[in-house]
Length: 307
Image (spheres, helix red, strand yellow):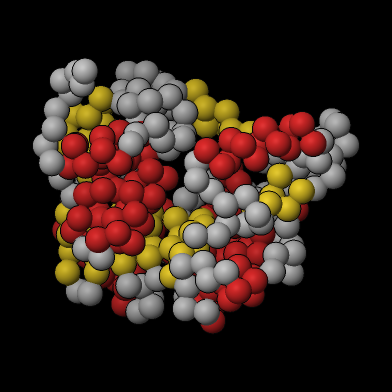
């Protein structure tokens, strides 16, 4: 699968280090767009995300630092989507609400990408990922819903959590309280059914199910809808959390892997939930879990040491 990305560094030595790191993740680097760097970041730089993990009764806190980033400076027309989807035949495009919220121009980049993907029959998945701090200076909740509902018309696989579907698309979940201490499955199913009714282009709609007992003890699960049927992942009550950041992204990537490799939504939602659970046992938002570890967890494997 081809990829298009942007970085802020033009320095050869730093650029090669970044490229090597990206290649280690199996990502095609041919489509990186290098942007001239002034040495200090006055005009362009790479983004940072600061996260305080939290512990016990103290919840985690995140601070995204995305101003003047190369990715946020992208505009409609900067990427040759015909080359990516047409010439190279990318099978799947995944993007999300965080990128759409980075600047006044990034929503148009996303809309251009998903529209062009549909022209070539490329599957589009989208993670709603609502972040109030990113939207507040560019139109707030109203703008977030306007942008995300427009993008949603082009999405095949829609992913989010309870707050994402509510804030980004305007759907309410019955039976939840303000702190989301209880997550009623039937309420989520009704919400997804309403979303699919409004957006019949959705082929799959999936949501994580997270109830927070403390910052370090969460119950974790997921459901997905496909072709009128709901599939529920193995539920993991009282899951111990080292670092919750990256759990949602790892759910999305596990779900996508499962859909691409098995064409079985029941298996796919379990790949997603298991991958998300494992990602939260390591620090940082980049998963350290292997496919073998994910499949071991799905099959009921425990935490005994592997030697």
